[in-house]
Length: 454
Image 1 (cartoon, one colour):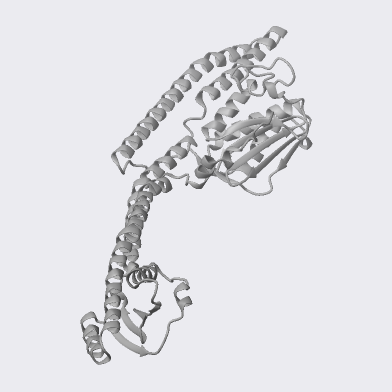
Image 2: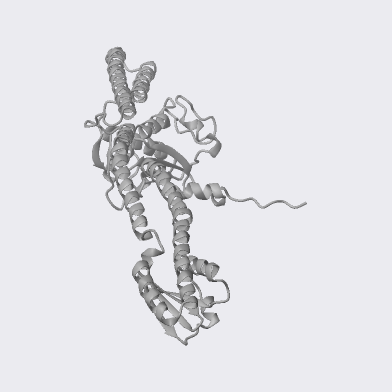
């Protein structure tokens, strides 16, 4: 039993065609418009040369062959004096330059030479049909004329025939017209399509910027009706989302105020009471409730009301990491920063700082040494946090992002919290149009990668 070899999709004929086609709308639309024009002109050119030009050339060649046959009959029939007069009369009427060369012969191999064009070949074939195979002849292209030499009974009859007598018109002019019209139509198509595609490109850039949390103040619908409708739908969607975020932020601000006010009163009352184990436990509960409330508010708010601004990711990461280290009272030697050069990017500074602080705090909580690095390539800027802690098994990494979820075994990133640390960090990364990825660190622990599009 023989198995047929598996062919990779990219090497199949369809895959090769897809790889050769342009990916952009402008290139594909241009092919849709220009390709039929080129194919139509190719078909018209083929029909013109293979049918009309060829047929007309053969008809004209038959006329020339008939004239040559008639002149041969004169040479073979009439006496020398009358032949001279008839020769001069024929040259005047036929517009040939006729010369008689007495006593000369044409060798037979002269007819076997290669032909330079279809006109030469058609002329040779029609002359051969008219005079038969007994007489030897040859046709030579000489600039704008044909030099036709035919054997007669006592010499060679030489005729210089204008090339215009053997063809309808110059094919070069026809090709020039075809190519010129194709280029003109292609230029018009390119200008038209560029104006039609530009609004779509602007809409795509505006949607991409809005998805990354960047302002798009100067975007207005224009272009074709369908593009205007899509742009207006985008503006309506953006307005609804911004209104929703504003209302949610205002509501959460009120909720935060209403909940923190009684907690503040409780803390004041506890501070006025005499110290005791029960009072200390209640104070810890109140502090934990305030911390939980702050995390709830951060997760629900998502920093939606903050505007993006251009900042240095290296400096922002350094400040956030050092702030996390101070809050945990970690030794300076436990935190290493690898930021060789500034990385400028438009981000929400406060939100991204909170994201980095959460990740560094988790790493300091579970690892002895933490390395924070910032790298950038053509597509992404990455903030990488590595530690040498227990890490998270690959099967549980996606589970660790679930809000209010605490891992039961191995490393628990939410120890001492409510299970929102990674959820808040990923939400902030995705608000910027990026993502938060978890991997195995070269240090043996967890690697957290904040990936942001540039």
